[in-house]
Image: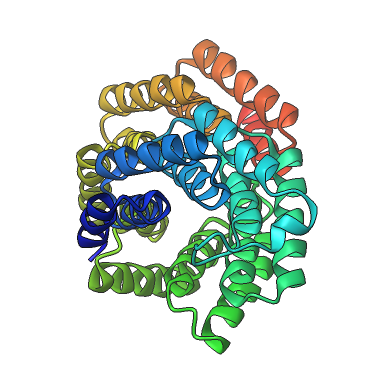
Length: 353
């Protein structure tokens, strides 16, 4: 339908409707995980909005340039686009929907929160996340509010503060279910389930992750699917179901590569390194290094630190103590610099081991 709308808008020369059709097409392709197609429409909308000084199209174009850049792993470019949306909607303009499903002033801050977390900029991410919650509360919009709580929960989960993450994602899930915001249910379930698994509550986390995967698969919304597969695989590994974990991690890696989700690819490679390390140290080390290289290119500092931790554990277990000390010391320093105490304490324990 949006393609027909675009054709009609071009035929009658309605530039604003043309721009909005491109925004909606960008959103559609982003949600189903087709980033290259979505990027073309987002860039066209952004250019058209800037040329005509049309705020509605400018906001939609920049917002989807931001989300698609983030999903593709280009965090620095995403930072610029998210900041542009925030600049376009100061003060009372934050109450303008600009034709989107969520309030973009809140939504830009919400997705920016997750983007900053992947870069290890947790303090700034928390600030943006809280701003997003306040804006969503101010307009009383359930979708925007559920999304804001969820992304701040993602940040705290990445940071290793699973108690805070659980409270935020539970709030997101409650709003989504009470207000019938169906799109947010699998997102909140995924984040809660993964956090439960990492904090030792694997038996509680696995059913949540499975439910999230089932919903995403049924809906055809593939945006989060590869990463949810990887996190489900991580939970399966913690449950000592290694064969299932390996198969699901490989599936997540294939889908991430097929959709050019480079950040998801890096997370999948790290997990495959962890799985392989248990029986094939050489392959495990190679996978960790691939993940570390890609994460370094993308500016994903927490993931780089996790790769150092994994390599340190691997070398300690294989008797290469000097190399283990180097990697574990680097991981400890990185976790300390990013204020990730849960993970820093784990690295310090390995150093003492």
